[in-house]
Image (cartoon, rainbow, N blue to C red; front, side, top):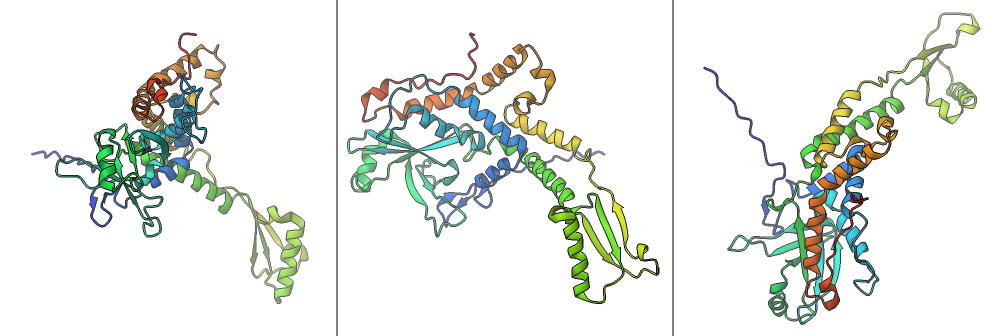
Length: 366
């Protein structure tokens, strides 16, 4: 009788509650977001996908950008660029909101998404607080600060509970495209192994070239009786080849039973052991998987070396760009809705009428 074995998949992002910190840990070691950011930055394809997504999500900026949002001179587009930056990495963004004593919003500051952790749930299963630390690996040095989660309707009671506006820390809007989960895996989450493999492949090839037998010359001589003689011989080699060339020379000392002076020094050439085709297939598969995770941008948008695409009349590449623009449209809508909510009931009433509509990168009507 055949027995079917069901393969159970673990949650890719464990989020157990850490009582000592009073937070839901982001990954087993509470360092998942910091790790995936490093992984992306070390993967050529993933980093390229991040840059591309930022470009399409931010588009040409907000339609209305002819005013400032604060006394620092920040325009809507400057705010937009800061909001867009973490989305390709983490599928979300976080904004700290300050209020005055009347409960009106007075200031907005985008904070690094990877600094934020959810706090304990209340009796109704709602998480009313988040904690923020610059470095969760060293909370003794970077003590977490607790903030109320964004909820403008509750701000007046929160100010009162804090003991007045001077003691009130404000709220944090913490939003994620993956709203069903405590923490989003990020776009790279489903292809994390492929991004790591791409990086490891580049490291391996670098080590082959810098440490392997890449066209090495082996020089064999009789054993030197004095260290000073050995040093003098090595210096002669260095002077003849230069600093860069010395790395390609290996000096061996061995008994050479020959009185012929011309044969007392032997030179042998060792060929390269680097196989250019070794990772061609696996690197290509990793690139495909990474692109799929980032909403499948066409390879031509990541790597412009495809002459068959860019040698076209231009209409094909335009359609490729429009296709990716449509795939990222839901992210632009996500930003627009949340930014519009942010600027409702601000100290400056003129902000309340702004739509904060993002202009697409490609005008499909042209």
